[in-house]
Image 1 (cartoon, rainbow, N blue to C red):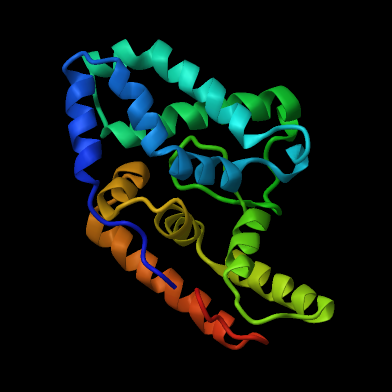
Image 2: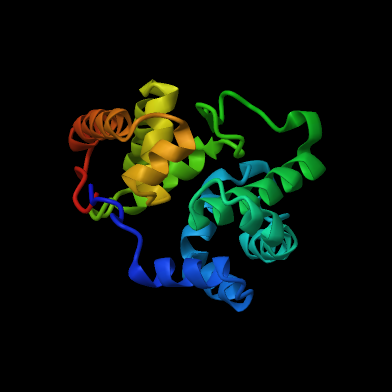
Length: 216
């Protein structure tokens, strides 16, 4: 499996400084710079029951409007790094979409990856499996593919809830060690240990699958 990104790019630091200096134009640039990461977060966490009804682009567009409205509050009290603030506001918008469409049917423990303490909508295990399968390079028959889905689903479900969330944050959302620790409320060392342990467990299962795990 490839490793997620490491330190924040210098451009993000520069744009963050402009934003804190009162340059509101920096917000649009920051949002565009991190749009792919934010889209990945939305796609991972949007409920599968909303497929065809809710588009990730719409969530991002409304999320940007929310950011503009909440910018002054963030600048007055920037409790988290700017990317985590972007992510939090967009996730709040996604949670609103879930509540609007699903109401009391939002949570389904059989279909979702549990969170530790983050208020984000839970990552869909189906989306997680799809992303893992998307990295398998060997062609597969329909029967083999179905078996792969079941085995990866079992692997994902076998992980401790916090371990699963660490994989989602680090490997798929590509948060840094520091960002992951901030989101989960754990130390960087604890988060890193959980990430490595979870990847090793997933890799052992994937290596035994037809077609292996090349490219993961």
